[in-house]
Figure 1 (cartoon, rainbow, N blue to C red):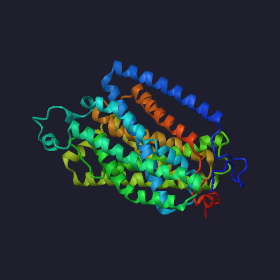
Figure 2: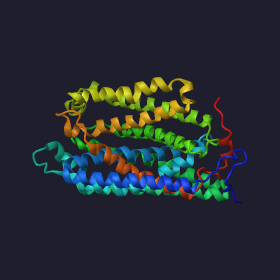
Figure 3: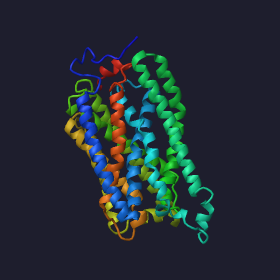
Figure 4: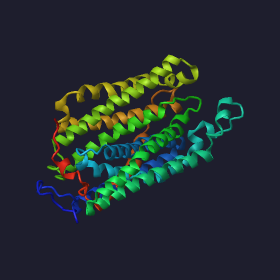
Length: 403
C-alpha cells in the first residue's frame, strides 16, 4: 500500500512536498550566508585566535543543543503515542537528524583545546586538576566526544529511517520499532548530554562542579528547539507551505510546550543556584560570583528576566499561544535568550574581570555554524514528505483540537 499522497483530501491547497523553486531559493540563501560568515570567521581566527576559539565554542554549544533538544522531543512523542504533533513531527525529525554534522563542526574545538581548557596545560602544582587528570585529559576528551556523536548518530539515523520508510508502507510495525529504540534512547541521551555538558562547558572552569549542570544545559536546548521549531513552521507558513494542515490548534500546543519548557528551565536553573547558595562552599560559589561581578551582574539579570520572567508573563495567557504574531515574536525572543544563556555559561570564564565584552566573532561564529546545520536540515526537507504521512495517527493529528 502506497500512502505517499501529495495532497490530503481535506487540505487540497497544501502539498506535502517542498516546491523545487522555493527549495532552490532557500538553499542558495543559506549557502550565501554560510560562505560570508565562514570567510569572516576565518579572518577573525587569523587576527585573534584566542577570541575565535572562545566564540566558536559558544556558537557550537548554542547550535548543537537545538538538534539534541529535537531528538529528545521526537522520542518523547513516539513513546507517549501523541497524535497532535504528528503533522509537524517530520520537521523536528529533519532537525534531529542534523546531529552528525555536529561531529565535523566540533573539529575546530579540538584544535583549540589548549586555548580553551585549563586542564590541557601542566597541572603539577594544582592538586584539584591532578585529581581530575584521569578524566580531564585531551585523549579521553576526544574519545568521549566520538562516543557521544556515534551514539547520537546511531539513534537518530535509525529513528529517521523507520519514519521515512513508513511513508510508503504505513506499517504500524515501523512505529513499534521506533518506540523500541526510543525507550533506551532517552536514558542514553540524558546520560550522554550530561557528560557532554560536563566536558564541553563545565570543564572550562575545572575547579567548579555542579551535579545538575547537564540537565540545566539540556533544558535550555530543549526550550530553544521548541522556539526554532515554531519559527520553521511559521517560515513555511509565510510561503504558503502547510498553511492549512498545521493550524492554530497545533500552534497552540507548540505554545504550551514553549511555556512549559520556560518554567522547567527556570526550575532547573533555580535549583542549581539554590543548592550552591545554601551549601556556600567556595569551590562551588566562585562560578556564580564571577557572574555577579561588574557588568556580568547586569547580564545575569538579563538572563533571569529574558529567559523566564518576560516569556512567562506573555505565554501564560491562552490568547498569546493562539496568536501567530505573538507566538513568532516569543519564539524569536527565546532564541535570543538561549544566546544570552550560552554566552553567560562560557564567556565569564575568559573575561570575568573585564566584564561583558562583545566581539563580532560572537555573532559570525553562530551564523557560520548555524548555517551548516540549516543547510543539512534543508537537504533533508527535500528528500522526503514534509509530514509523516504513513503514521497511523496521521489523520488523528490533522483533526486535533484543543479542549
